[in-house]
Each structure stands twice: as structure tokens, then as C-alpha cells.
Image (cartoon, rainbow, N blue to C red; front, side, top):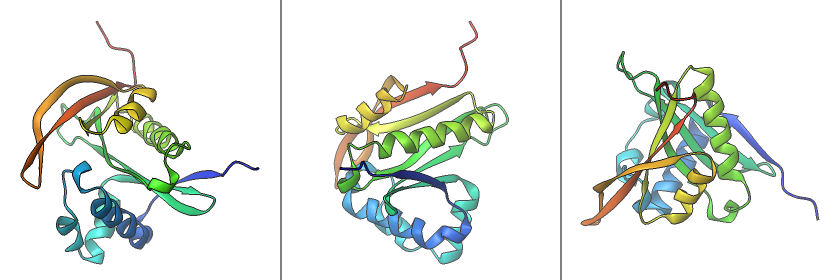
Length: 172
């Protein structure tokens, strides 16, 4: 049996419909995993979706041509923090998990961060999602702390694990 082919594509404003579809699916199927809610994003106009794709780097994964996942990279905007990127909007469809999609998306995000001169990429993951934390650890992210009650989901506090991957050696 032939292994499935995974391809990664950097999305542009012309991919707004695909982005909208995957992002809303993620927020609907995994609401406890995201700081934003489905209702936050479902109110956005077509122009808002296009603008979001111009403001941050978003990558989509395709497995045998079918959309399989999504991941974004947002750059800090302050003059003293522009060396930092934030891994955002991480989603892999349940039917495509544990087959390398997440790893390939992270590779694309890290390559983009390096190309933009970023020195580190950061993320916050639900402490209740050991699979995601394992994915990040496997890809070089180290936990540096916990944000107690980082999210409120349906009135319940969920801690978030703060993780960082340095892209250049630390200067000490």
C-alpha cells in the first residue's frame, strides 16, 4: 500500500474560502482548543478573511489532495519583539492525525520564521491536550511555564502550557 502524499501550501488572499472553511471547522469541532470561538470568526466578511491572510502567514496541509490541516505564524509587532513569532490556529482534521501532517505544517512555519529573521517561535497549548504538546515537543518546542486559567471554555478554566522553540543559539 502506498503512503499518502502530504503537501503544504502557503495561503494567499485568493485562498480565503479554503481558509474560512478549515478555520470554522476547527473552531466548531475543537472549541476547547482555541482562544477564539466559532462565533468570533463566523461574523467575518470575505474581505476580513482576505485581510487576515495578508496579515499573518497561514499554511494549509493537503493529504492526497484533500485539505487536512491549518497552521499560522504571527509576528510580534513591537520594535523590540519583532524577533518573536507566535504559532497560531493549529488544526489537523481527526482523520489525518498521527500521519505527519502536524509535523509538516510545523516544518513550513519554522522555515517561514527563519526566512523572516525570527529568532524564536512561541505557542500556548491547552494543558488538557497531551497529543498537541507531544507534537510540539517532538518538533523542538520546550515548555517554559504554565498560564493558569489561560482560557475559559464554557465557564471552565483551562491552563495553558507556554512553549518556545529557539531558532538560533542563545547568546549567554
